[in-house]
Image (cartoon, rainbow, N blue to C red; front, side, top):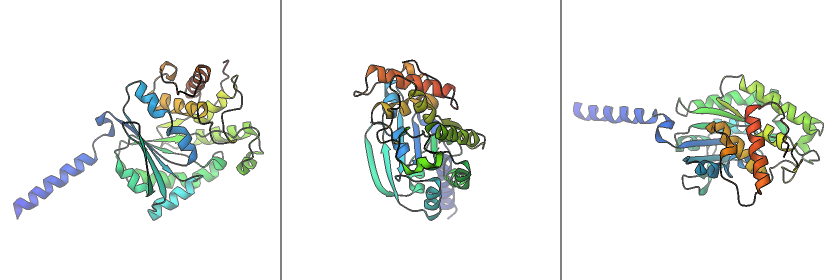
Length: 283
């Protein structure tokens, strides 16, 4: 009997030790977004390829509900609701989508290095709305992941100047007003103390709009253009997460021209350097 108890104790302590192993020990960078279509635009396309080009091993996950605000994520967390599409890009770069997954299930599926949080785009510049839900969601996630897992806040982008999205009315249908509001929220979130990084995708897109390509980085007024738009966001994520100058990364999507790729990388690099201010790009 004593021998059996001792063996159970050894197994239990080994399981605890395994659970607490640093996520960085396996040489794979694992990123999970609790998000929506803006996290789809940000990390599901080209980020894995940028990593592969420089020998990075990556697993990328996105807990997707279209248009989901932080308040919905909190509700789903508290109810352990299996309402997400869990899009997961494995080491081989292939994406597998699993339906009806809960936040807790996705959190336990990998020893995540980074968990990303973001607000729904119409509310992304409303700090009073963000703060109603963000601390509770952060607390929930912190209780279910490795102590060494780090949190990031995804700074989303302002709408195209002529966007017809009804949420644009929150910012007087003015792109710069919306961008400044998003930046203000990002600054305040950064000071909360919960986040390792703010990924300044919004500033990268705003930088890109100063280039020769102009205000063409969305496909419908708010979601990113599928090729160079998404590539710009991916470049921003890459440089912020890995701390490497993305301009030196050789990867370029097939449908993106050399000029478009150069603009995407330059605007991302400038955004990481100055995440709360527009930097003009002379390309």
